[in-house]
Image (cartoon, rainbow, N blue to C red):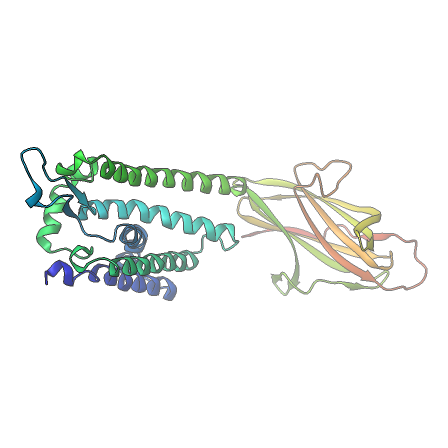
Length: 363
């Protein structure tokens, strides 16, 4: 049995082992740029693309004749064509496909709300690589042992690398250039890689562009010197003064001045939805926040409007706010549903204390 036949699983086993090692380095958070790069870089630029090509091209590169030598005559010559890919071409295409697959996985993780977290992306790339590896092994098993692709002998690798320049121009040998079908297939692979890379890159730019500059607005409560996004006041009493703090986190890449319009709304909840039946503007506050800083706007809400369906609403604007502030024309809107128990009396309004503090802190 030839050595190339015996090694038909070696390359995919190396891909599996390398992928597992790279995933372990990422998930364990091992430090050290040299060690981390040594394991992780192949997961980005080699393993997934190589596994995909192994699944698409399970056969090794070989010359095939359509007629036997015994049928050759003066008028009839055997037709020879080439199957498989040069090993150097596999490596070149593996790098291009790997970058495309990693970009696609990163895009998917971002679209499902996970962001570009290194651990999540690495796990996704690992899963894709294992899937293609399993398909590659299954397809190779269906082929005769002597035509299965795999890790070639060193002499084959050196010869393939020496002809890389010619292979990039035409992934087939000079003999096979006479085969339009083989040439078309290989050109289709190259064109598909370029098109896929372009589409993924365009999709990522289009997806990220709207969120490149943004502001986060959210309610917090103060616990000592810290702020927490929990423990909001929701059960209030008429006349009770309750501090409510709005955080403005600036990621606009420049210092920004915000106007915060605070309203108290009475809601009518029906089977068809919720509508506002009464609203009162309580205050307008301006806050200037530096880039990558967070301002905390604290206000004392003293409700005298009683009921079970009340809502405190903050409309946030960049710059000045319009006279008619609402959810439709605001840049950000934050709300807090509260209940105010009946306490008798009152003028069915709410009082809002002026901001106690508008401070900046590093985000």
